[in-house]
Image 1 (spheres, helix red, strand yellow):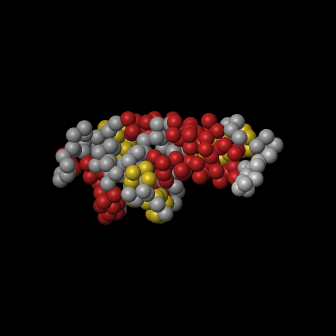
Image 2: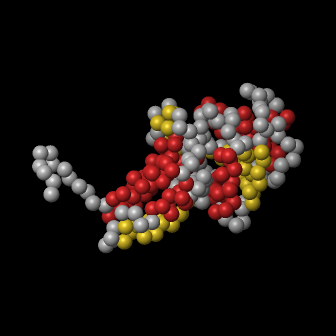
Image 3: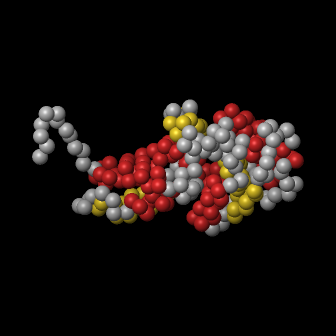
Length: 253
């Protein structure tokens, strides 16, 4: 699969590095550095997009300014791309209204587009845009990418006698590499502490999602991202955890 990553800063560079390092060997990942300065409204995208870009199957938009999203239909036209992933890891970079417009613009061109919010909510079938609101999609290129990068999916092995994690396999990493980092840190951890430890590991990793409170969640996108990882870990260690009951007024043993 041929991928073109559009970047404008550190956010995109980290994503590209992780995809190149851990993605399938038959993927090619090209990079286009978006213009540093764009007008508030891009009336003529062709003025900012090169006349030639590498032939592409899937465009990954990792830009850090809203104007970049307005260039994506032109990028798809120039590259011949059939699908686009434009994550919303910050409303400042891709506002929800623009995300809806982008999906419509590309649909009219026959190009599939997903706008996961946050990026690590993407699966092979759907993605999240708000609390308890997911959008289903049907596109083989996006699904092929989401098979490897998107909503964290770890496979945890627990020693039933010691109740400690002995191995963690990364089935699907976050695009930024956070899930792989957490997997390494969870080995040897007691199952009763695993969920909290996963949250701490996510907190220590440089998550690129926004720390501003998002009205679609009434929470920060960084916390939503961390909860996706915690939930994956918690579900797998649950059969091994011990439930403690506290009775008020009774001294514990």
